[in-house]
Image 1 (cartoon, rainbow, N blue to C red):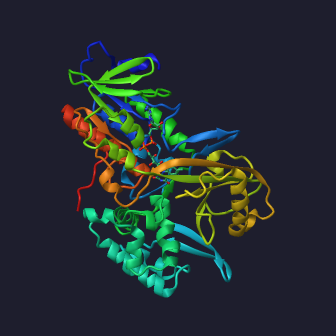
Image 2: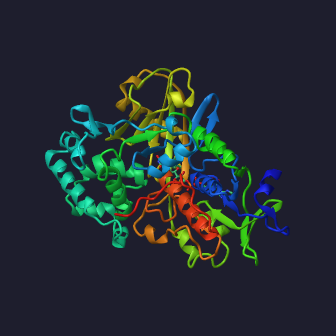
Image 3: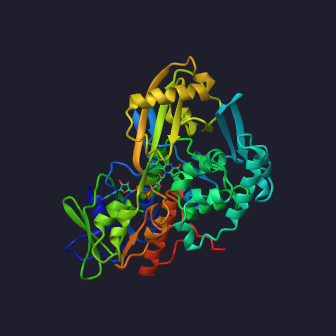
Length: 475
Ligand SMILES: Cc1cc2nc3c(=O)[nH]c(=O)nc-3n(C[C@H](O)[C@H](O)[C@H](O)COP(=O)(O)OP(=O)(O)OC[C@H]3O[C@@H](n4cnc5c(N)ncnc54)[C@H](O)[C@@H]3O)c2cc1C
């Protein structure tokens, strides 16, 4: 670690510096957010990240000339905290939203061959904004479309504050509300698997209802999709780092925290290899298992519960063709193992040909499959879906595997997720897996970082920065 970190946090044994200091552990979106919020409130902040870069689970790496994202990330217009974050790091223009929700959905298993449908919205109030799209959605029968409409209204009526929702699974609720297996596949799972990282049968009704109510049944534009038109690292590493530097945060990468302990005078000691940092406030913004291992005794009533929060994998399959094969920026697929396909050509810096990334959520069955097997499975599927690939040469084929991409949104997970406050004064938790009410998303990560900073600032008696993301009042 460079000497820089000492400016914000004192060595153990030396008096704590005047003013307030904080150490944030973990440089994912949650930790970056907490660090920015605390620094904006005048706290002297040190951010410690074990890896060589910021961005946590949403990052980029080089593969020859190609800049590759570890996994395709999208967000929705209703992700107000992540959008605040993009603004705060001056990156919003690099990850624009669609003007209006429009998802091409291609089914390759129809008797008549390939069939394209679209999920899009009109400029009408909720729920009419989706009415026309649903009424003409070709991947469902008339009866199924009517049943989907009824289930959507029933979903809209669910009270997200009702804790019993989290004890039920979404799949059973859908079946009880007249949804056929086809409706689950062609609509509910199409959206749900990508946002929850689980099929309906494995997902908490509470989390699923939250996603569908917020995304599709709140504001007409809520589900408009946005994604980075640059590598994720440009946003979550380079621009985030620039914002942190300007806010006065000392950021140390390649610096893994090995323990966190409280001192008798109420300050905290944070151990990194070779030295100890001291601070008034510590935010642990690391995944649940690492949090469990770093938590000092007594900080949570039942710390072992953190280990009961499961994880779920996401696989990305990357294919570089020698020519342009696809005109759309992205599409979703039915009747094939392929889930969502994105054109990554421009963002990756590819000079010639086209680079497609397949995002495969809830990938438990494939996450450890050999590359050769995945190649054999996915290239023919792409030929079925994207006629332009037939006859095109594959210049590169590789996969990225994130075994612990998200927490598993299983029924019952809600009561395992802790809030930002711990029982240890001055110690706070952040991370997409904490109790934000959201599934494991960039939105959840940013919200958790804001919550942790809010809790810390109120304990430190410091005013909230005026421009910090504001949580909406509960209805
Ligand atoms: C392939 C993939 C696709 C995804 N797709 C989407 C999507 O489309 N939309 C969406 O919203 N979300 C998506 N997500 C989820 C999203 O990336 C995460 O929810 C979010 O980035 C989590 O941020 P975080 O800060 O909570 O945690 P993390 O990103 O896990 O950050 C924690 C950080 O702590 C560091 N750390 C751990 N231990 C220590 C230690 N002891 N000392 C110092 N540092 C430590 C880690 O290195 C890491 O950088 C996807 C995730 C993956 C993997």
